[in-house]
Image (cartoon, rainbow, N blue to C red; front, side, top):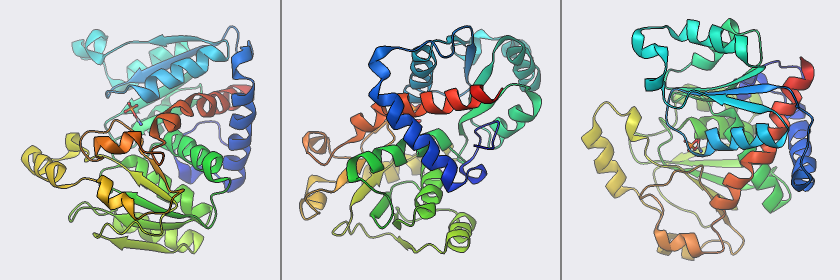
Length: 303
Ligand code: CP
């Protein structure tokens, strides 16, 4: 791998992704044995936005590799409430830790932090822009369940306008020549430039629609309405009430179709679907640990 930080899927070549997916697979096989590879290293998890999975799976990954973790909990417990800047906060933590994992509501915050910090920075989600480690665990899960990624029919369903996961994943899937269908409520379509970019770069077939036709899907990937990114919260709640994948909608689907979701899920998937053999999102979340172990290990190996 050539990159020293892990900020955007755009920084990665397909070879890098293949390498990391293979490494994560090998890591998962021997995860129970424990490992002291990063003994003496310190990983900082700095979440300026809420998180359950990304924060805890990064912390688990670092600890399973033998590293120690520092975390300031919520920003309300830091000197930022006294007016300390983001830049100074990053400089300080960079002086304590060997690697920084950052989530922030501002697009480009992780890229900026990577310029400020001397140690590697991993983007754990920046606004509606990118969530590259989620994309890695999504590709890992698809490859594990379907034994391939190329040629699969993948429907990305939900808030494609603000869903950073969907933006990163569309790019990753296009790299692998999957057939991507984008399905969103009206007004929450994927950014036009992002679609144009992957079509041009990868000669990808991307279908865009507001109709929920899942008949040919091998993978149905759903994300929630990103209410926190709407300027009009009532509009978000209106769409959230109307937008839902139901048991009836998946009844006519392929028997081996898998349903993925980055989680958290709110109302967008019928609860009854949790019990269906199609639902693989809890298994997907678990894959975050070996995938993030592979990424942390690779970035710290370079230093
Ligand atoms: N998938 C994901 O990013 O979940 P969290 O917001 O809980 O980290």
